Length: 596
Image (cartoon, rainbow, N blue to C red):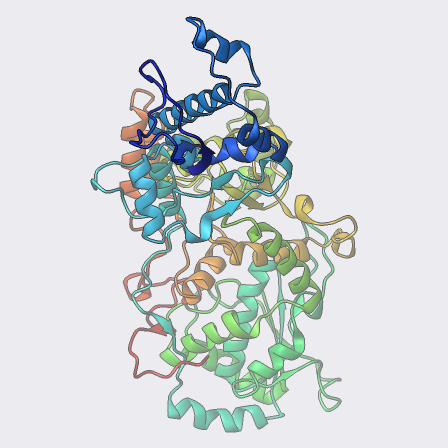
């Protein structure tokens, strides 16, 4: 408020003054100063000429009985202006006193004023305040992101907004498991190191291997080929990738993997050569096709060592699962060294794979799904896609025509396989599982795998519930995937890279890719990996009378220990160390030196 100063001569008033209280003076001839309180907004709105006229205009001393009415009818009277300003100021103060809300910055969230002020004073909103500056709304203040998963509970400790609860559940889904301090440790024994000196210098024995299957299956065989070469003390010729019968991919080793990196990492373990030297080029290699499943190092030495020393070259085919999973400690560490360090994808593949992974992660965490819904998967497993009777009949007919494709147990019916957890999950089952585990509806999902049997319609349950659903074709810019077209192994490698970099990974069925990524994520610090407990959860999927809340609770309870936590291979005899790297390749003892 401003004080408006008026100089005026004292006048005598015959009546009482109900509005203005004038100071009385004992001396009528003495000039007095009167002060009138007027809102500053009103004074500022008056022009200088108006103020001047208000100060200097002569007063009228009419004493008629209509004196008060004349103030309103004669707008030039200074008494009229004084009364008008005084009343306007009183009304303004009353309005201001009864409505203070406009002074509080606008908040779109259901938070009380005191709670908002507490949050600001405690520093929780410092980085979330912004002032709009576009045109006439530049004076408004907006508060963003008041509720977040890291925000402490409100003052009473019991109140939680719906937004807060939802975000807490979402953050729980993205939460990583406790790795219990396990880190890679590939410290080799002194005996192994001493033997390495002679092995890497030997130029008399060479091992040639031909690996088959898809990219991930070939990858597993390459790991075992390096270990077998080490057992025999032989140099390993760069593995030959057999043309895939199903996909027709003619890629060579260097098309998929970084050959120079492969040689460099294994330089102190096994000598890697690109081809046979001239001294052995005319040698007819000894070919062995009868390697039994899970052969031990002693069996390999007793069977092949004399041959390779005599002939100089040994050729092995079909190494899938031929080498035992239970090896001495140093050879287990060598397996991990090959799988997690030496076998790096070729730079062009690594480049496009990392680009797609960055595009997925640019807007927050993402889930990678390996969907095993291709036609050959349903045929081989003896399972049915569950899309419609027509699709089931197609699968059954092909299985009857080609019974050799069935890799599942032939003495079990489809329903028995299903309840035993031997069938891949279809899109509806994957959707229900993800929802029960707390996956938010806005979750970004990358799906890896071949074309699903039934096309896009087979994915409708997933895309309907989780609309942010992408594969490599969706993420790639025009022409980016063209250099890799019609090369299934390269496409599988791209899927592997994006899946490996995801925040959460889940396969719909087992398989070489799922197993390899499980080991990779464990070796990287036990990043979240959901293993569907199909055998125990499917009965609940079939129980339509179970309330959704109870269903979700049961599913979460079943999977609380299947989220990628450390899982010791010693409790899983016969399992691959590249799937379960603890304890042979990882340890939580700080005294053990890490390979990295």
